[in-house]
Amino acid sequence: MSTDGNKKQFWKRNTAKVPGSIQHVYGAQHPPFDPLLHANLIKAGNKPPPTTPGKPKKATTFQEFESITSDAWDVGDDDDELLAMAAQNLNIEVVMETANKVIENHSKQQERQRQDDTTELEQREEDTQEEVAEDEEEDGEEEEDRVGEGDVTSPEVSFPSQSSPYTDGRLVKSHSEAPIGSPKDAAGEHAALHRQRSLPHRPPVIPLVARMADQNTSGTPAMTEREASRLDKFKQLLAGPNTDLEELRKLSWSGIPRQVRPITWKLLSGYLPANAERRDSVLQRKRQEYFGFIQQYYDSRNDEHHQDTYRQIHIDIPRMSPESLVLQPKVTEIFERILFIWAIRHPASGYVQGINDLVTPFFVVYVFEYIEEEVENFDVSSLQEEALRNIEADSFWCMSKLLDGIQDNYTFAQPGIQRKVKALEELVSRIDESVHRHMQQYEVEYLQFAFRWMNNLLMRELPLRCTIRLWDTYQAEPEGFSHFHLYVCAAFLVRWRKEILEERDFQGLMILLQNLPTMHWGNEEVSVLLAEAYRLKFAFADAPNHYKR
Image 1 (cartoon, rainbow, N blue to C red):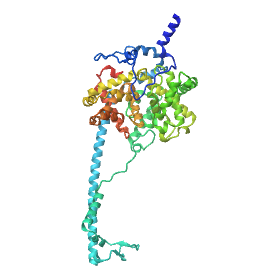
Image 2 (image 1 turned 180 degrees about the vertical axis):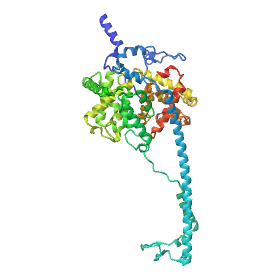
Image 3 (image 1 turned 30 degrees about the vertical axis):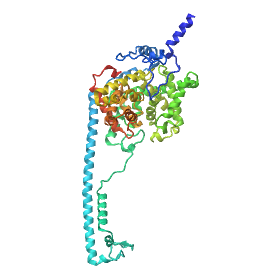
Image 4 (image 1 turned 45 degrees about the horizontal axis):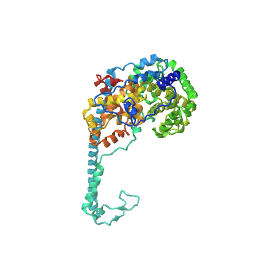
């Protein structure tokens, strides 16, 4: 009996360590139920626990839980030297200079645009006045000619003479028709014509995809001289036998050209080694390893222990964006395999809603290696089978690398997210007290809107093209996804301070914060956001340690 009791206790202590055990699935829209904070509620059933304001509750068992499940997060790679290199800090002066230049260039560009618009408007007004003056002069000369020829009393319709400029025999209304209408009508018609001519010419509206270089996730607009120069720098750096990752991070911080983004992401994430000779063998080994997992685990997706996880993945994928891409049957199958295999290999968290969104940027970027068209309108099933397998395996491993750095965002009760939301609240209270107090006044809790920002890394707040540009910097920045993202969220929130302060009730604030108008954002807006976040990072370098966790 004692032996059975010991076995029971063992499995109670180590349930999270059993591969494939059914895990709780938390919603991406709402914070999770934390048993550490509601222990009394669990024991007392529906009886509310006594409140003890002023005494912070300490979560003392998370470390124990983390130690029990630490084996699930073993990276298991033999590229330790590469990861060590990737952990080095950027040159602070270089990146700070870049951040300042981005903001300065943005301001100068806006000022130049205003000056150009003003100059163009003045020039058009001058041209219009000259045209009106010339027309009036010509009208006067013609009127004098007609008076001299006795044409004032001519009928409404006159036949042009042989000497008339109209030699095609058409009937032409005479200028003597004008007096038939009232003088007031004629004057109003002339004034309307003058206003119409003096209006500034508005250029046609160009789609955002076309007007911003490397703006869209897929198209290939004409490059400027500066962009072509940057692309050459990337190609030269990547062509060497050993890529200098430090230089690559510096170059990538302000954005990566579409043509070299796939290999750059693989290098910066630690998926590929810096040594060019080793890359092909590493890719072959990792891709074979992934499809070995498929053969070993994927058939078990309908087993009793795994069917809940697979069912939730199957439900969540159609909710992702862009719909035109993820709803393609081939893409849906690939995403289901990636997410299910990841969940099986990481029982400490299992599958959590929000992880599904993190596959998309990698998948889209790696599709670019094989197509030139816009990926949103591209039939992925038309790619060769080998290309699809490579894209799938590369997306899996790079997503795994990302999640290794933010693992506590998705473990039981998601303590990493809760800690970061609290850090965001403290940070905003320091950088913009007006916004913070406004939130407090209308009882808006940061967890109610920022949980999704941390859980989905702002992917539900920004267009996919902006997410990809944002991730260029995240992968170039040390601890970009785990640490720098906090400052990006703070800069993002303060960016909307005017709109926030205009809302005067809880409902209005929540609707705004969950539907921020970023649909037309592009590279320029993201670059300014990143520059502000970088400033915040160094302005609050003395911030509490939990900002960096």
